[in-house]
Amino acid sequence: MPFNSESASLGGQKSKRGKSIATEVRNQITEVAEELIRAIDIPSLNNKDKVLYLKAIMPFILSKNERVDTNQMPTEFQIEIIQ
Image (cartoon, rainbow, N blue to C red):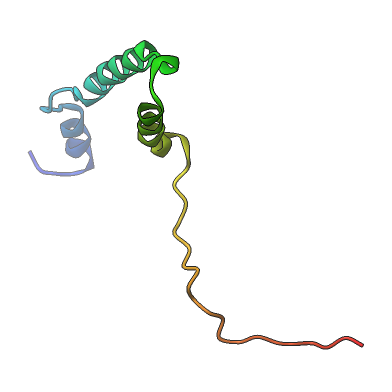
């Protein structure tokens, strides 16, 4: 059987790969994490534990922005005197 667009189409329909379990495992881990978060009694934590909790969840709350280099000085500038 020669390889052409028709045989390629038929071959693509017959997948020998198994189904991905990554999404299933990810969903289970998400459920476990959500249950653990709901189980934490935040008012009973001491201040140090509250800070550690906040530090742990901040990367998931805040968006990751690009780093801006604030040390770079401008190479050109213009001064205009208005009288």
